[in-house]
Image 1 (cartoon, rainbow, N blue to C red):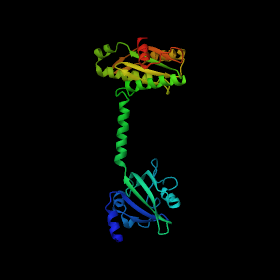
Image 2 (tube, one colour):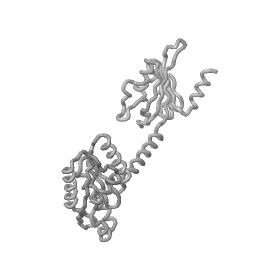
Image 3 (cartoon, one colour):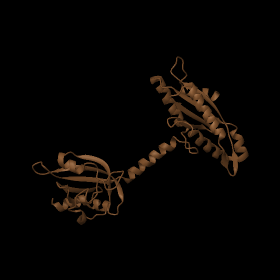
Image 4 (tube, rainbow, N blue to C red):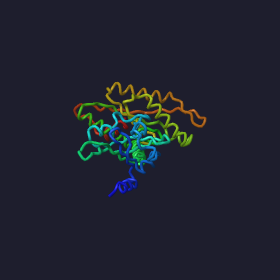
Length: 287
């Protein structure tokens, strides 16, 4: 079969393909490469890959080939490589691609060039982003943006396991907005939502970045306070209670003040310590 047959075959493949010589000059450029990059075969031939035609951009910045060009590495050591990167097309658009580079060997088994096969990765990345967003949403309360009950349950179980294994104690605060039903009845559910959001923001700003606050359900919240003593846990609870009481919430021209009641349990390594998630949360709720 002649060269025309093989060129016609490669031109009809879905994947973009180009070949370079030892100097990284492009010696073959198929139709899929034209379609993806916007450069015709005539424009690409003889150009230096990654310099005159940008084929390996980094994710975080334009105009940068991957550190130590992977095509060049394959030309040196003869090892095939697979990687994800970006190409920049003729119009300056950066396109995510999955690529594979393989050496081309001559009759004497010496390396005489390299071939790169690459395909558009946009759809896969978009799917991954959607999946990650859905995972995040599954763990967040949509109104307050805090961890939801499902996530808090998992965290309490994880911290209880760390306590059993490594003796890492933690505090659990069960927080309830007082008389919340009367707020909804008097001012409406929009005002109630505003109170939930404002209280969650106030509490979040008064705990450490390493601590976790979540919405347990309705007007109830749980805070996990890590690496804390009984005295410190009480101080954190009092600080939250006082800051919420001092906060003024504005909704539809009304100025509202609310208070919270807080129960706290310290989980620590001691004989007979209650470190079961359900018992911990129930005890804090009772307190």
